[in-house]
Length: 288
Length: 267
Image (cartoon, rainbow over the protein chains, first blue to last red):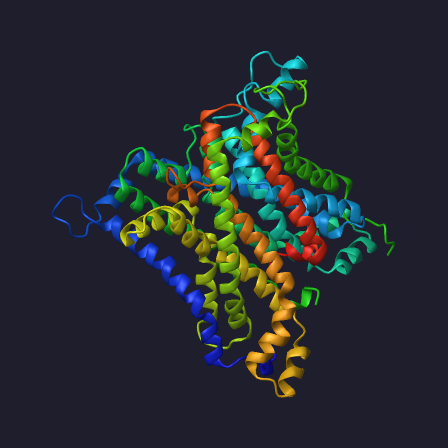
């Protein structure tokens, strides 16, 4: 950065005042919320860890947390497998038509509304929906294939939800890999696959970590898709917390659960951050 | 190197195409389903009608929710941008200790699960005596959307040519007038991109919003969730079709002005 461009400390601090007010609001909300998870029930008052003990002591709540972590891992891997080629083709395609088509599919999806998409999958995957009707008419099956209200439906709809996050984050790091390195490998006689696995893929590891980190975080906090396509049978951590409030009316337990969930999410953000620093490449191999 | 030489293999391209078709399937499907005559899905489709559009716009609760959603977005978008311009400027051009940490704090609403933010605001607003409702929604969504606006503006400011500001400073302009006359006019792409993100998020958000709506003050996302839970007909598909057309037009205009790849550049 050019030092001559720096603004005075006083002006910089004034500029931050509005944001600091918003942050104060945001973190006061979390402060009060955190307090409510520590409040002892009954007339006695005082602080207690009882709600945390209750939450972590419940096998079903622990099971939901594990399942949430597992589904998020599967979703991140799924995004990597189909999202990486998509980002790569967008960045490297010689045809601006294909580039534009792929970009448009991402942008339209991103902007089409989450409730809309959840509803669309409900009808597409439902027992008398698009896929099952098609399978029946073509004589493939007689009985409907159950695709909703189970983990399959939640996975498909969530993969669709998180994929744009992965691709949009993966594009910039791929663009920064010097094309001449890949071309050199091919010119020296490597096959395209060999050049990909030995040159492009290793150079894009930092990008993969960054994109996976965002995808995992988004997947972890998913709420609406399991709510609509899980039909109460498949629950993720956010859904379990919602149920604690709106069906069991146990606000302190929900706050304790939400705090545990928050700490868990921040822990994974931190782990990915460490991973990212570990795989960061020197500036020499990146295109300037 | 020949210009038409593709560095990736055919199977890579097929995977990318498959991903794009997978992404487009629900959007295209819901758009066609909105014109379906019957209340239930059938193949081949049962004719073509606009009856679900009438059903959507004729529904009192949907109309009310639409105005609430538009009202929230109309307040949150300018508010969020107004806060982020000085914030982004201080983050990019200011030199003070703890800048990285502050940036992390400002971005934190993006990482914190929406349900957690929703519960926190529900408890906080009730403790303040405001309770759930329009004001709570505006406050919570302003906090939630701020990172989107700040990100877009920070990216915009990083791309500015330093010579312009340097020249103005060397010619004796004050910091305030450099900002007002040199920096501000160059922020149009960031404001448009950030504003689009904030607007869309403010209308679309569900996981925070669902905690802060009341019987009378409800948003399109929460109302349409309630509808698909209780009814089985394409009314929500008609709403989706309207929203999709609206957002595609919005993005095409933005793309014309700013460029799509610039707008969705993720730093």
